[in-house]
Length: 243
Image (cartoon, rainbow, N blue to C red):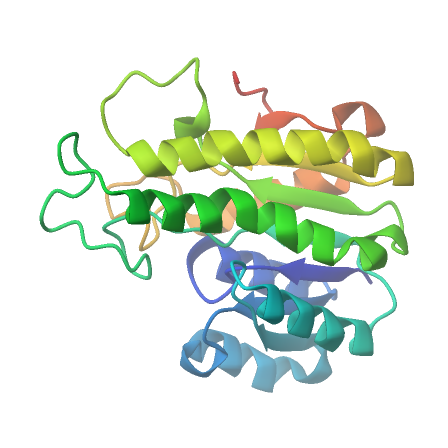
């Protein structure tokens, strides 16, 4: 049984990852900004008893990070897997950024929107990993998986859209690749994963990939990681993604 921490676990891919880790018998810490509103997580917690711990976490808040760490550290002395899944896409549920006035198009871009997206999507995963590093160091062949996007690839970027989101994922890739070089000295493997275009609230109904398939692939990939893959950027199927 592994100890797993998943951020942004209240819906979509995060919720599906939580379900699948629970089904195979792992101990899961599911983090979300508003646990009281995470109905599906609360139901899972009731069904699974102590196997699932739902905890509040705002990845942009130092106080929230510290409190979440204390809660997890009180329940376990190690973490084997950290999945940095929390993220926002302007104009989609939970982002807090209104897209109705075309605020994501050139001529309407705003500094405060950019900082909110980059703070959550790029700096957030770095600070979560930093906060939980002591528990990861104590884990068995610990893994850090940070969910990126093909939109974060400089080489593949060819559209004038998703300015803040694309930039935030490219920045996250650099943060976590840099962290991988340092964390690797402790036996921790850190990778960035493009989960694919998933049929969720964020991905939309036009996406072809079910969240269950992506989650299954990410879990399989995480289990099979080797040291030479530390710092890599791959798809949920394990194929390299251009930086």
